[in-house]
Length: 114
Length: 118
Figure 1 (cartoon, rainbow over the protein chains, first blue to last red):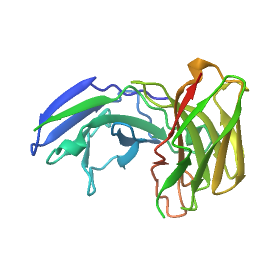
Figure 2: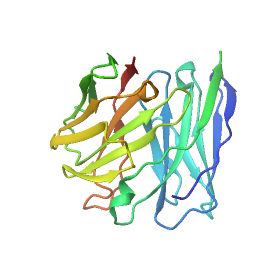
Figure 3: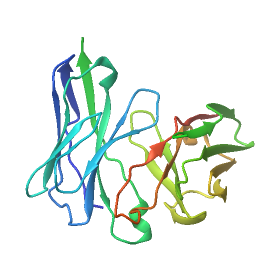
Figure 4: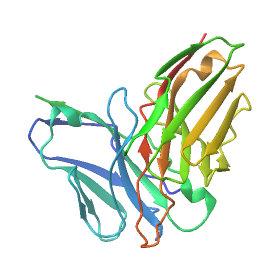
């Protein structure tokens, strides 16, 4: 599986934007970039995914570098409820049974200060 | 219904007990998953079912036995567990990798079963 590198932790202030980086220098052409987050005492929650173009949804934006070797999850206005571990995951979507796998790395623990 | 429901929420079992964890989804997802998560660690994949057939077993000990009775249900049967098996067990489901329009989807996770083996 292609690997991702994220900072162990980041801190933000409430109502400010947060940019969570992810490096994936060995990404392949069929790897989608997925982001999940896990709030305390809950299961992981899907946030957003993308392949080449930047993506926006109600939760966040995903900015993907032109060479696809890095990406950034953007929370436009952090709230206390956004405090969680954020996981950047590459998922190969070419055909094959192993491609059902979603493999989590260590993620980034985001702390949001009031 | 856009949820994955796991029961029970909490389970305490002895090392000689047999118990089962249950997972249910009604989103029409044809792939279902079991993950194990130890405290302050990321989730680790255990099993993948695709169209009710076991497609991936990540070398999980035989004291964990998965079962997928139908497309909506996933069970994890537990027998002769060890204290180190205490963890949060997460179930997830997803569409197949791509649909007919070539769309890719994310996983939906349940809240997990907190298992303690004594």
